[in-house]
Structures are given as structure tokens and as C-alpha cells.
Image (cartoon, rainbow, N blue to C red; front, side):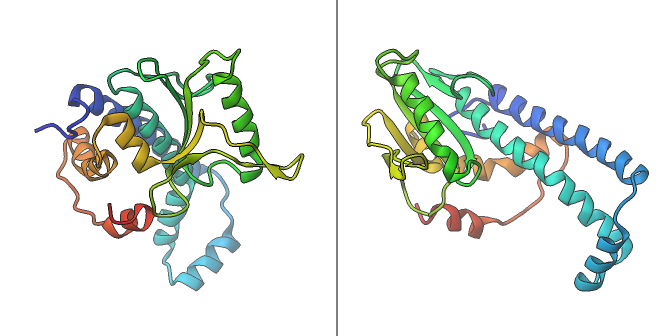
Length: 233
């Protein structure tokens, strides 16, 4: 049985393999640095006293802390590459004019993993960039541009005009029918035609990781976190 109903394993599994490879590489580098670099003994002493940690426990905590950024970066990789592997969608890779394009449906998208990945004060710049792409002289003239926050600020569906505040003028950018803000659950539904595609992806991760690692599926229950992020859908 395929991990996802909307993406074949031959496309999904390599994405997970790439993510895990990068995390394993960073872990190996970190293990070397933890053994060779001078760590803050005062921080270790204070944290261990407050959290009742033994020295080995503190090292594991520090290791996890330093790995957190790598995991967060890989979550951005996950969504951009899964969405970019869908029929009619193209992943333009990080650093390009936008993240995803669907020429058939005339959609382009800027995908952020979490609502606070970009500071609110910087969203006006994203608005201007998107407007330039879909405006009369843009590369994607006539397309609809979506600003996607996969993990939204509030647990409810959101697909509305993207009107961030402009710090220079102190007022919001004007609403434009071609510029929209959308949450990840809603965007996955739009991109796949499957109303619960994002939940499918969430539920598939443990089995996919176990498959790539050739290990048993580790049972983990983060359902409460998923509901807190997206509500009951």
C-alpha cells in the first residue's frame, strides 16, 4: 500500500531519504564537534540543576538543541518537494523567484514552514515580489500567487487576500485578487484535490521513516499537536 494516496512512493520515498541523509550527516558532524569543542560548563551546571539532569542527559539535550535548526530546515524541504512532485507542479528550488509553479492552473506559491518563519515586518517585501511576478510585466503575468504558511498562526482554514502591513507607510498593502494568504491544510487540498492530504502526510511520516531506515515503525502520538495547529477538519 502506498504511503500517500496523492503521490507515488517512487517520488515520496526519495524525498524522505534525502531529508534523513542530511540529518544523519549533520548528526555525525555534531557528534565530532561536541567531543572536540569547549562547551559552556556554567550553562550545563545550571540546566542540570534546574531540570535534574545527569551529565549524559544534558549532552543529549544539547545535541537535540543543536540539531533543531537542521530538522526545521528539513521540514521546509519536505513540503516544497512533496508539493513540487505533484502532477502539473514544479519545484523551482530555494533561491529562485518563487518556490512552486503550476502552469496549467496558473498558480505560483511562496511556501513557508511556519507562520513566524518570516517576520511580519518583512512580509511587505514578499507582497511586492509576488505582485511583480503576477503583474502586467511579470514572469507569471495573470497567475494567482499564494503565500503559504504550512503551520498557521490560528487553527482554522484561511484563504484570503494577502494584505501585510507596510512599515514604510504604516498602512496595509492593498487587496489584490491575484495575491492570497493560505494555510498549509487548505493549500495541500487545493494542490492535490484531496481535502485531507496534509493529514495523510502527517500520518505517513513514521512509516516512511521506518521504511527508509529499515527499522520498525516507532509509534508516536502527536495528534493533539496536529489538532492544535489545524483544528478539527
